[in-house]
Length: 621
Image (cartoon, rainbow, N blue to C red; front, top):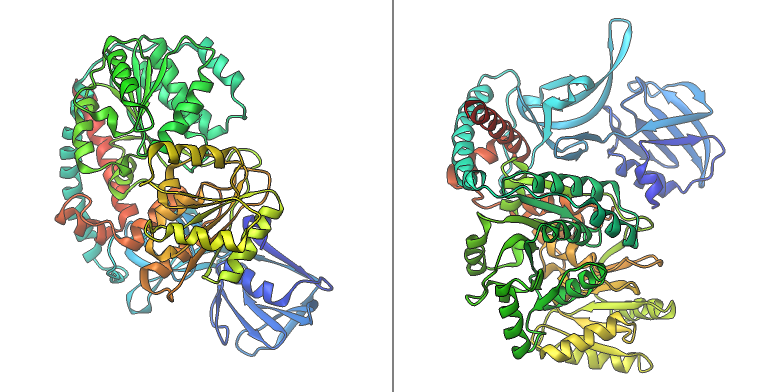
């Protein structure tokens, strides 16, 4: 199905038009219509032989589309009770039955929360007569099959219900005082929480540093040497970061964006500004491969600037590491890039100004404890494609600043995603297809014990092609050499572990095959899929499994197959939270409150409480 069709807000049908009958059925599902045997309500459709009947929310009478093979023969309106034809039409437009609210898109059957009425089920859009006029409403079903018809102009009153546990919430009773009482009690609890959270983050507010001056000559020079056109979201994120730097309070900002959406470029520009103010910058990466990639990219980006860049990771020899540690201490290194090695007790900065943390959730508890020594005094910029629940939540609540890059770079296309049972013949077909168009393949086999055996198997099947192995237990020099060869196009198929999750940008790599995908988390799979699709060819991802998918594994992979649009990382983080549950993000009591209101409304109310407290504090100073 083409992306253009999915982007439309309506479907057009006309007599004589040729269109695949089965595709129309799929399209109606995609546009939020529910298939049933016999039409009874708006937002439904039925199939009877070669006739598709649709009850559009924007027509008082349903429509029948009569097919002859795959060609539309007749279109007519009919009465729902008598099934009697009213009159024929030459064409018809069927509107989407999906609505966009706070928390994302909702379709018929999804749970929503009305700020005044509570939890209900979205039953689609509806057309009703008000006096002599026809007006659009949103239908919401409550307990006892009661319905509320909400005018479209009041859509801000509803949010998508996002649960944080597997328990299905009870529907509210329409007009009951129970919801209002419960909400007021929770609002008081949220206000207290906002106070506590602000106290934790107030230490940063108390900290003061000199205001940085933005060097627009440096900025302009970097902009001109950038190989791509900045996206609007990149420009907006940079503007927000520069405003933070110009304040006298240390920044704590989360930058969210898909893999390959330009987070690193934003980080480079921020780093350059801090260095131009005679401060040091540290970039912390979760893996040696990512550290090496950042080192290569950033060294190239800053080659025409008076900036000394160095790297600390297991790819750097011991003697060289000792020298770099001395240079960090003396201040002769301006920008240091590395793994958790940067958190070692021997690392002493002369004047650290900015700490950039790439994929903070990948660091362990001990590493995070060590990070605290920097966090209150220096500016912090955290980068993430799919943040973990607590990080996402704290940022959404307004306590921590957040910037989002959702616009894809020019010419990037969505990755075609298939979820299917593992079949050796099919996998071989996919490999041959990619190699034939001079592309490269990531084959993810996440078991170090059997990874070499898998490589031997494929070498026999593809004797003329170069197949290599990459995993985290390999010696540093060998791993580094393999990854460099793959990036240079010398390897056709890389049989690898999840070490590629935060890895190299390889333009020729446009096919990804994942074995036993049901063993991975949704955010992790999304991150891995982001490793392909940088080149001109259409990228394809195949997520394979051996046992039948059930429960959460099925939900995860369905979400991944559905969310192929570029810039879905934010939505994936929400889906992951909904499927796995948020756990006790902020303690038992607040967990219950979140369940009661749904995460979206809870976060909205917390955000309002934080803003109110911030304003009253600012007014009293």
